[in-house]
Length: 424
Ligand code: HAM
Image (tube, rainbow, N blue to C red; front, side):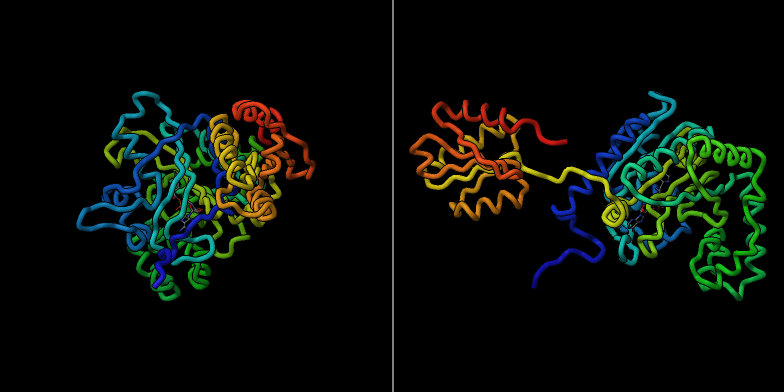
């Protein structure tokens, strides 16, 4: 029996990798413009890290983690917790009071696979740690928006505030009382959540629950003065950066560490998977994990979702992978000379392909087109005897003689001059 990939775990094949690399390059470029530095954290962490940060009563921790219970470790379902662990472990705040970090890599959640929803998926994750100012919230959101714009994607932005330990508990109490009154209209999950994680009821997708929460109390009406002021100032700053956004008072997010600002970049183009990226503030998290009392804000975008959206929406031109030259050798002498030439060209930074199987000229030209070669050098036995190959521009089809009178080192440097630098 053939062995196939596990459900929800997907190969990213060479024909889509150009898009992936383009997205990653664009992200790295924009993150650098905002002063973010890359951090790479392990895929496996102690399970306790995720339980304590994401929250025991969240879907992620309750049912979606890939854990090894006998070893007490888990494959990371997201990157924020790991970055905070590393931040605390290495005392990064001592080196620099405000840390701006990003990471790119695979995450693991045991969800039901669908279009745009995988069990191994990839995130671009950005975090600014050690800053509380509302301008920082707006700047981080603007950075995410800039990436989506530069990728040529059309998304909408929604924001909300989840308050703080001062204003959230009284709101929670009021919400629980309200939900208890409407107990019979809630789905089974939300009846349970009323006691374990009542805020999650606000973003339940079931029609009956949605109808109930329309008249639920809103945390935005109960924010303490500091949180309200913070939220107003984030909104003003977003206007200042010319960002369009909507306030969504039902947005609660699926991870428990959030405080104050939360936001989501949404699309209607991916069916049920509306969020292309999402994030928010997590002011108590670092302290809760045993670190200093520093606040933070961040977001993550799903690379699979960005790649799917780009396929549908983007007119952005990105350089497809290509080869500079394909060496077509026909006959043993030609092949010997070309293999040495290929080695020299590669040493000199020229992307060079060569076929060792002795296929026909037609087959090799076809292959040169398939791999998007800019030039091909054709060297048959006759050409070999006459010391003159044919250099063909694969885009214009123009051909010119290429003298082989001197050494392969000379051929190499003349070829590199003719080919010139690769297109950007
Ligand atoms: P999240 O909302 O759980 O937040 O995930 C962020 C993004 O990851 C989603 O908007 C989506 O694009 C992508 N994503 C999540 N789950 C899947 C999946 N199963 N398949 C494909 N894509 C998925 C976080 O992970 C937070 N750590 C974000 C954050 C950073 N908050 C503060 N800092």
